[in-house]
Image 1: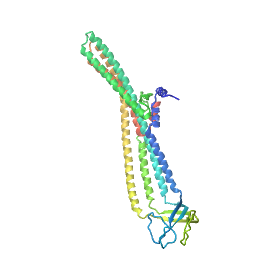
Image 2 (image 1 turned 30 degrees about the vertical axis):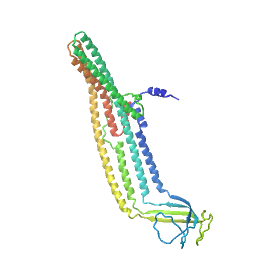
Image 3 (image 1 turned 30 degrees about the horizontal axis):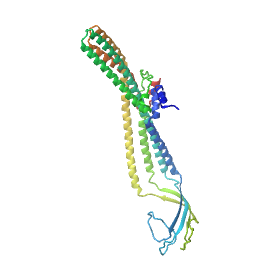
Length: 448
């Protein structure tokens, strides 16, 4: 059995995760996916429950009682009072006897004008919607995991550029210190160099803070501790070679499919309501036996007579019923469902419009990101040349401290922009894939 320390060591030695592995682990560990899958299970159980309406209903009853036998003639509306059978008695008596009853009641609806099938269709539509909700949740979790992965890589690249900036500022600090000590440069330049060095260190601290925050966000999705999160860049620090597939189809996005399922579910409920106001027919059958401790002519038998059933009956029948006054309620429910169908349909159209707008914006962002990534190497090369020249001029006494400081900051920023530009292209590709509803093209590009 591994000790906690051994488990921590094994986790620390685990290989870094690629973006594809991070997405798969997030889908396996993040609770929101499990919640959606549980809703699918509940919806599937609802279908099975709806199908049980086709089965006959069988009720078994049994009772034993000790009661008086006073019976009076006259009508009494049903209101939950115990019923009594037998001849009426002329005088009130507290004499009591045993009574028993056992039996079975079977009822079955042979036809229903499609009502049960409509209710099953409602349950199936609910399951389809739950399946669509799972797909939407999985897409959201996968997109969030990939985005956090890219954010962590970007933060790491910023740290590297900031570390290079700190090294350059320390080199400048040593150069300025020696020149000031030799009385070649005024002491104010040493103060400026120290300020630039402190500023570079502050930038590095902020970059490392961004890494820690990104690790915490990704760890939340992966079910890990922040310190356990390690990522492998793979091809994400390179520009993707393949061009974007400019498709404007967003109807297959899980969010659109889920809302389309909501529309179909509302329509299924409307069909069920259309079949609700029909006569209900039933086939009934019953067999039962009763026991009583009293004779039909009045005298009681005494003892244990009545504890066992001794008289049996059976019956079969056919019933028809129509809830006449339910027409108003059914009509109101149909009007409510029709309004819901309109609302769900309008919401579906809105989602499609929003997704189309997001897709167009994602394509525009991808084009701009690619152009920026093509331009940043030129920016880095020019900034590096400016830094070399400014340092050479400063050492030769021709340049100023301000020129060198500006050149160093320009170079650090250019390196940060260059490292983030490639990730910016990948982030734009992720946005396109997420809006189209399928991350596999993005993950395949990242792993090629």
